[in-house]
Amino acid sequence: MIIINKVSELETYVARERNNGRSIGLVPTMGALHAGHLSLVERAVKENDDVIVSVFVNPTQFNNPDDLATYPRTEEEDCRLLAKGGVSVAFVPDVNEMYPKGAVHEKDFELGTAAEVMEGKFRPGHFQGVAQIVSRLFELCRPNRAYFGEKDFQQIAVIKNMVESEGIDVDIIPCPIKRADDGLALSSRNALLTPEQRAVAPAIYKALKEGVEYSKSHTVKETHDMIVNAVNANAGLETEYLEIVDARTLLPVENWEESPEIQGCITVYCGKVRLIDNIKFR
Ligand code: PAF
Image 1 (cartoon, protein in one colour):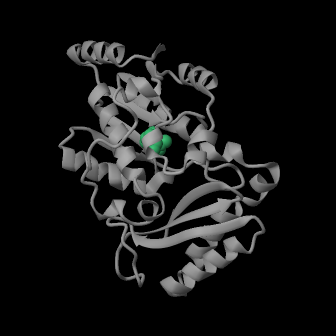
Image 2 (cartoon, protein in one colour):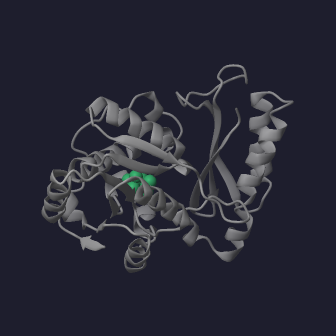
């Protein structure tokens, strides 16, 4: 595996591989890699000739400066794991390299209504920042396929909209959520939890799973309230939102017959750490 820090070096690498007819898989990450990321990498390695993994904590997608400052960074360990996973290139740029004109929003991407709800409402500007960095990575890496974890369910829908509105030729491959044995969705932010918080956090997925059972004999509203109450009953957990939505539009549903694909998306504060998760209802 080679570690590339410079955009120009990455462009040379990509041009050579593409000219040689080799397919490229891209796994965009913000580092602090865990088994969830590694499952994306494993799939990308199987399906492409070359795999580029970007490790870059993107400042333009953070609407909260504290969140950016405390985001876990484990670059050396990340590169070690990627080399072991059969990756061709770890692309690890610094902020100046990715944003030579400064880390600011430069244009408004058309991201559709999927970007306005849930995370879009609670984290203004977040998806514009995600679109900015992901479109730049697509431009530099020219991937045939790009891999994203379904823990960020809404992010995948927004990136698909961005790809369509920008006319980018890439297959977006969603990959299933990886969970710890106790059910907690793997996330880089889990590293910020104290042992007490880590012990209570699996209650989020437990409530979601119970909610799916409960939904078989209760309305959407009753199911929503049951899950929120079950999560908030745990000292240290506070639900920011739970939305039960049409999985294709991400707009809220009022009854179970409204769509054949229904997803529940939740955000919970565990102390100051913001955790997200989701589950399929229908
Ligand atoms: O999902 C993430 O880790 C980030 O949002 C991404 C896609 C790497 C863009 O910075």
